[in-house]
Each structure stands twice: as structure tokens, then as C-alpha cells.
Amino acid sequence: MVSEQGQSTKNVCVIGAGPSGLVAARELRKEGHTAVVLEQNHDIGGQWLYEPNVEKEDPLGKNKFLDVHSSVYDSLRIVSPREIMGFTDFPFVSKKNRDTRRFPGHNELWLYLKDFCEYFGLKEMIRFNTRVEYVGMLDYGVFGKDLKWVVKSKEKKGEKRVEEVFDAVIVATGHYSQPRLPSIKGMDAWKRKQIHSHVYRVPEPFRNEVVVIVGNSLSGQDISMEIVKVAKEVYLSAKSLEVITEGLSKVISKHRNLHLYPQIQSLHEDGRVEFEDGSCVIADTIIYCTGYSYAFPFLDTKGIVGVDDNRVGPLFEHTFPPSLAPSLSFIGIPRKLIGFPFFESQAKWIAQVLSGKRELPSYDDMMLSIKEFYRSRELAGIPVSDTHDIANFEYCDKYADYSESPHLEEWRKQLCLSAIVNSFTNLETYRDSWDDGDDELLQQALQSPHFTQLGVQP
Image (tube, rainbow, N blue to C red; front, side):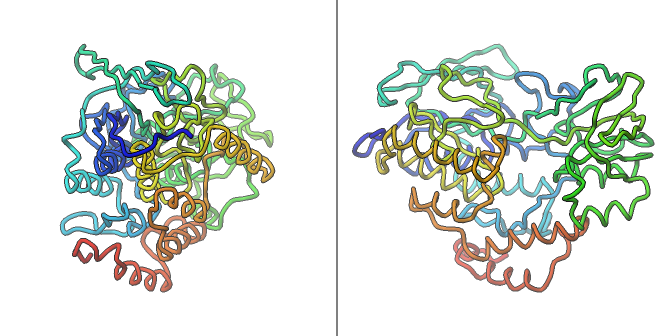
């Protein structure tokens, strides 16, 4: 078996002090390990540490190491109600003189993470302004048993480089930073402004412009609704015009200068954007709201772990690479789930496996599980690029069982689904209005042990 017998303490490096890295630090310490968190920014928060200054970043995010980690824009509000988002033992309650909305702005979520960090005394474990440049194996042991990891880091503002050896490394660098771009004919020849939504912050630079927005995902819809108020014309280019939600249709019918178009066929040097139906517009700017790629530019596993069409693998349960487990693990790879409680169950499991409290299956069994998972996704017609999109509460509960973590409460699941359904129908207003069923669920939530455990009533 991969795991060692008996309790043991490890010296662990956690990369990233966002939600995943913070809860990893908390769980590692709870399990008796020594941990250091390396964070490239000046504060905690990861994606939620807003960075308004994006001038230094390549507009399409083509640099290997990005200057800007956060892709959060100024007006961004969370898409899930705050009640469902908190870690299991630290509810996301509204506080006096703060943003008390059920779907608050990004700064409120960052303040919640600051509160979490302070409450559990995690700051002393974090080394800020430290960029990890290299993570590699010191000795390649049998099935990871004797494996140690070399971590090379550099102070962001100085020249000081540090090389350290750890028993284990947890990668918690998030998945909303490295822009994923489409391949469009003429993209390199198009001389006007092209940016990825990673560097979008405010609508003002696009005043009186003709803007093409590629992708009608959450960010594509959000940014369209914002830019349409200042731009001359906005053309929203969607992969399929067949699956447009009622909510988006309402928004489009409300704004005379917002138009829905098919995918782009080609771009031309004179500024023309040609769509698949043969129509053309001359645009000033193209904004690619086309999502993000998993990227670990610092990680050298001798080709054992790779990213292929946005599938990170091979990973057992999206967490452990079988031949390097348990000394290398990942938190925060899965998408389309209630993030913070899931990251917490990942952190608990990793910490317990490292201490010997839990044991992983054999290498062969883990590889077989991965193969079967890939096959099931293929049979379901799910593209490789969506490998880590979970969208399944049963999976989250099954995963929680690995560390005997609590299952998601029923009210948490129902409030999550309700917000999604409401957004499909009322895209512009769902964050501020909901039906009576939500109010009942809300009462259940606020009276549950999750909210009453700290003796703080919201």
C-alpha cells in the first residue's frame, strides 16, 4: 500500500494561500504536521485578493509565470449565496458595517478568508511575497515511500532565492488564472485590442467602442451586461445559439446595443470579425471570456503528472498522482461544486493520509479507478477538457467519507440548486431577489448547527 503504517508527522510545503491553501494549513497543523505556506502575493486570498493594476500583465496572459494571479473584476459578485459557501466549522455570516447581501461582492469573501485566517491563527504559517519557481523530486523512491521534494522559491521583490527540502508538497494554486484561448483564424494578424477576461477590471476603457465578447459563460454574461452600458455596440459570440437561457434572452431584449452572434469564423487585419453565419462587424476590441487552463509552471514530475486538454492527470479522485502519492497532492482541482467545504474535505484526507491515519489503495487500484473514471466520462459524452467538472452532490459526499468529513447538509444543496435555476431565469436580478422557498431554506440554514456552532447568530 502507498501509505505508511502508524502515525507520523511530516514537514509539508503548501503552495498558495487562497481558500484551498489556508484550509490545507489548518488541517495539516490539526493532524500534527509542520507546514509552511508559500504565497506569491502580499496577503492571503488567492483569487479573492483583488488586483486592480493589470498593466504589467500580457493582455492575453501568454507569459509562463503570470504577474497577476487574480481574475476578479471590480463589480464581481459571488454566484452562490453566502450561506452555502463557508467552511464546515466557520460560517460565512454577514457582519455589521460590511457587505451584508446574500450574494456579496468579492471583497466580502476576501474579508471572510481574512477572518478565517485570523480565527485559526494561520498567518504565522505563511511566507508572503514568495514565488515558487521549482518543485521537483529529490529521490525517486519506490511508490513514493521515500520521496522528498526540493522546493526553490524567490522573494518577489528581491533577489534572494531559497532552496528547501520537504517530505510532502500540496499544490493549491487555484484554476482561474491561466487564460485558455480559442484558436481562431487570423487571431495573430488582427491588430486591434484583444484581451482575455483575466485582465478585465472595469467597463470605462470600452466607452463608445464596438466590442466583441467571445463566450457566454458566467463571466461573458456578467461583462456583457456591464459593458453594454458604456459601449457603442456589444456582440456576444456564443458556441451554440440553441442553449441560450431565458435569463440571457431577457437581457438581450432589454438592450438595443447587445447582440447575440454565433462563433467567430475568422479575424481580418482591417478590424473585421467574421462569424460562422457569414456576417461581419468591424470591432475595436475583442474580449475572450473563454475560461482558464490548469497550469503548474513550477512543477517537475519527470512527466508523471501532466495537463492534457485541461485534464490534470493521472490523479486519483482529482487529488493524488498514484506513483507519487501521498507526498504530492493537489487541492482545488475540481470545479462545479460547492468549493470551500469540498476543499476542506480534500485537506482533511491529505493530512490524514500523510500522518498514516488513513491508507490509500494500492498503486494498481488507484490507476484502475482513474481509468474507469475516464471511461465513464467518455461514455457520458463529456469532453476531456471538462474532466474536473463535478456537478454532483453524491460525489462530494462519497469523497467526504474518505476522511469521515460531514456530508453536505440538505439545505446547502437546495440553496445551491435554487440559485442556479434562478440565474437561468433571472440573470440580472437573481442575486437580489428569490422566491419564498429560499426563505424557508434560509431559516433552516440559520437554525442549523453550522450557523449556531460558534454562538454567533447572523
